[in-house]
Image (cartoon, rainbow, N blue to C red; front, side, top):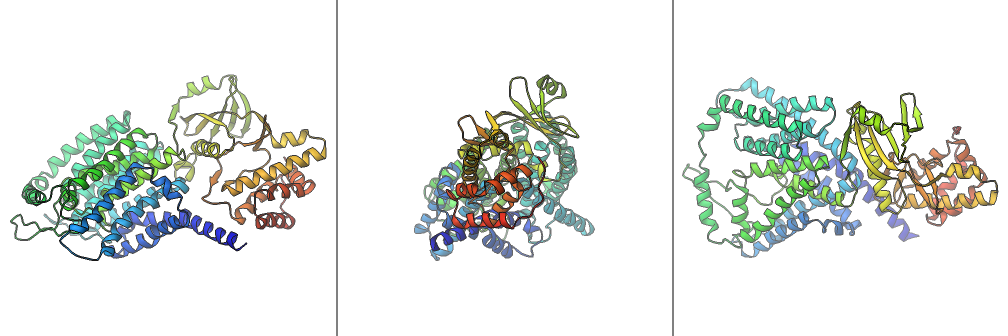
Length: 620
């Protein structure tokens, strides 16, 4: 009993971390720099709300680490971090190993936290990124307004919050400019498109105002990547806009581009290359000091190139995994470009690669602006790739269906379900089904994660768990903004239909007991099917149970809590026939079946819930 109680507590802690703490921590990692007074608080928020919770989650459930180790990007990052720590053995600077161990650990925990976040809260990723970008947009608009009031020639925008350097600020402004650019290429709603274009213009104006030139190159590279990974009509518009904006920037800001020349980059790189030549294979050590004097009257601490920084600190042997995880991240994103989030993350990575050509140098650091150029996009790509392979994310391409194609597909179709707006479920002439989902408001979760896609993803996940569901054939986006899923139905009848056809009470009682066991299996596997009732459970030809209409469902990290089980029961109690069969005539049989899989406390809770329930029934 005590062991069971401890297991239950650990499950609830794990669930709370994955479902609530990690989303908050990730959101603040992305946008807190815009309103925090300094970087140190940003570090503490990341440690307290993301990396440490991710470490606790891994300790509570070590088996999730196994899936992380199946991802080449994470393996390469792990090898890179291990080699960097090993290089402390020949580093000339002697400091405590524990102090140098923390930045690589927190970097790897970013990968772990992103994996857990995508695995258990994939539906929140797009709204979360959107909200973070809105915070960045509001903050940037305010910075530009204040900057315009004090502007004079030669002054460069820094920004407020934790920003204290125009070059570093440009990294974050460019990061969110790349986001809005990606959103303009992947969004399907006109409202989002009309928001993303001016938002992108605001962030681009902020990049220009910082006076930094490298982000302009990086944004050009990101635009070219986007135009090819999202090839279509918008790509042609993007390429045209890229030419126009490039010409405009050249004409209007030619002085900014030319006046500083090469900013001593060639001299800096030559000095750093000479130092690299001393230890080309193993580098000078992860924490080695670097001083570069290009003859400007003061010394610099960075090589102003991420590649040269890697070579200087960890040598060619460290450069190999560093190059590998970037190349693999881009190739993996290209192969799985059906997933919009991978398009956004890979665009961020391309932007970071471009920005790192002439800036940066610290290979592993605490959370700061440089993270936006490499670790944040790379960790998201790794997390998405892992869950994409596990089929927890959308794997089917979404096809656009014209009105004529829709009419041709549904000719002579039988209407199975409809509402005041028209048909909802159609049986096509070939026996397959087409389920329609109405258009949702653009700012709702149904817009970010259409219910047709949820239906397909949930169906695939349930099948992997051994629970029969309809086989998805195609996903469609219709011209009126609604969506549809085309699937093969399961062969069988609903449990409600089967129960209605049974006249012998003993046979019905046995069926209710089997359903109780099936419901307990769902709950123990963490399946919270909000619409669970006898009309959404099929009795298949082999006598097993299957589920239909699975769009309104979530799969939790652990077995369902008692409160979620109660909510599931309350939903079934609303239906008159379901309530009589399950909770009045054959309630003891339902309890016996539920007890075959569920714990005694869960069975007792079910018993108490039904006895105390007085919910009005809904006729069906």
